[in-house]
Every structure is written in C-alpha cells, then in structure tokens.
Length: 124
Image (tube, rainbow, N blue to C red; front, side, top):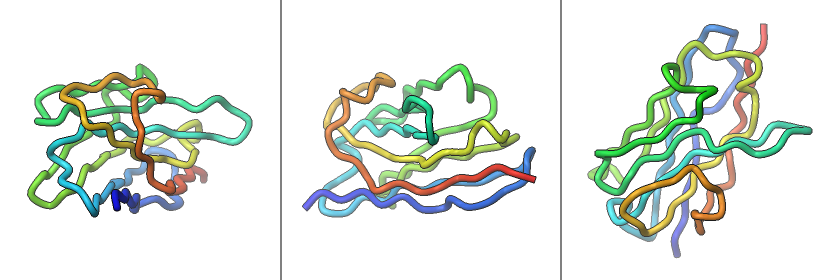
C-alpha cells in the first residue's frame, strides 16, 4: 500500500529554519514526482514546491523562492523541504504528495497520493 509520511514540523521563531521530510513506503519513490503543498486556516491551499522524478527539475511558489529548497534522496526513499528564513505567513499544515510522472507542476489536481501532513508554526 502506497504511503507517504511527513515529519519535521514544529514551532519555530521568525527567521528560523526547519527541514521537513516525506518518507515513502510501499512504493519506490524514484518513479514519482513529489510535491509539497500547504494549507493555512482560513486560506486557500498553496503549492509550495515540487521536484521531478530524477530531481533535475524543481518548481517553487514565488512566496518561498530563495528561502525553501526541495531535494530528494531516492536511495532513502525520502524527499526533503529545507525551509529557511521562515515567516509567520509560512504557518500551515504541510503535505507531501506523489504522482507517477516524470516532471512536476505545482497543481494540486496533478497529484494522486497524499500524506497526512505536518504542522509548521512560525511565531515569536
């Protein structure tokens, strides 16, 4: 059974950093493009970043470009989202998602498998 598990969320002060992990089980991650999405209370969901199957292509939302970095370690069956210079507006539940396709587009409907999410709270 295909399963994605996010971890690494927590409470951090503005300007701080977190690294989120998305671990896959039940399937080989290197056959999938992976995306990170977030949902804040009272706001529309947002595509944050995605990475192609090989890792050679990445996309970022303009709101996180230059602060967040997505990477993947196919040997560990894990994708990471390094988040630096965090702001209060980054507070949200972060979800990773997978789709068996070569490239990625930051569009929620393109991804068919989702994790349960991890809470990120940026507050002083």
